[in-house]
Image (cartoon, rainbow, N blue to C red; front, side):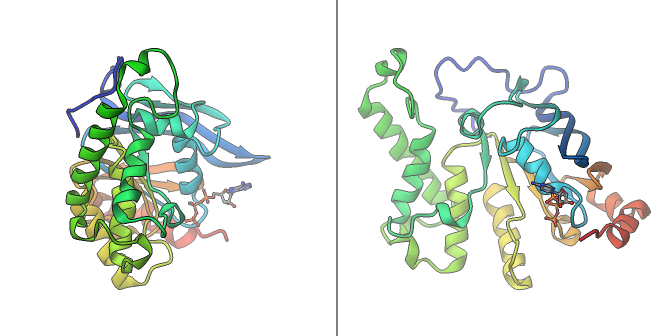
Length: 273
Ligand SMILES: Nc1ncnc2c1ncn2[C@@H]1O[C@H](COP(=O)(O)OP(=O)(O)OP(=O)(O)O)[C@@H](O)[C@H]1O
């Protein structure tokens, strides 16, 4: 968790004053017509916690994720980030407040260098980005430039791509491209990292390496990881929440979740598609 909060006038509490959670959902519900995909979900993710949300196909994981990031508007209920309600806030506003979500591969610009990609992401949340209001003008372009450059260098070191910084992103090997994608999340200096099935479509060896990378690069962050494969999240999570048919079936340590009979039943019987 970064202690260097450079955003001026940010009076938001670090945590939810009621629960101490960084991220909280309350009665979060999403209906598509008559069908309830996410059904009264209450989550509370603590500072520094690595939380995984798992569940069988169609359990509502991606819909929940999209309601948290703002890609979808929930039908009912609320999303609270550091104590502030963000339920109706635009996705980019959530990112600026410190909710860093994973980017799709397509957001890596192959024709730009690795450094330029990271810099663009850092710039997107830098002081004054996207705003032309009077107080913001007090921040000189030079200050802003230097803080973006500093953040870019830090991130390149964190993801271990300093030596590739000047190469075109399109020339990166697949594993390094994954590093760069995580770097784009880190460049926004998030208080919370949201990842939706980062290993989707990968073979088993690549999946294992990607999870190891997430653990290496993001272990000290507050994380919410959506994942279908229960085995993958066992070693990296502090807490696992199981979704089934839109509802929270259980929230517990990975070991207890693995032993939970209702979870095993849900995985055997929960496939609807
Ligand atoms: N836009 C939509 N309109 C109608 N139904 C939808 C829509 N999006 C999702 N659903 C339905 O909501 C349910 C939950 O879908 P969701 O993608 O959130 O599940 P999931 O747990 O992420 O599944 P998977 O592991 O297969 O990705 C599914 O039955 C799906 O068909």
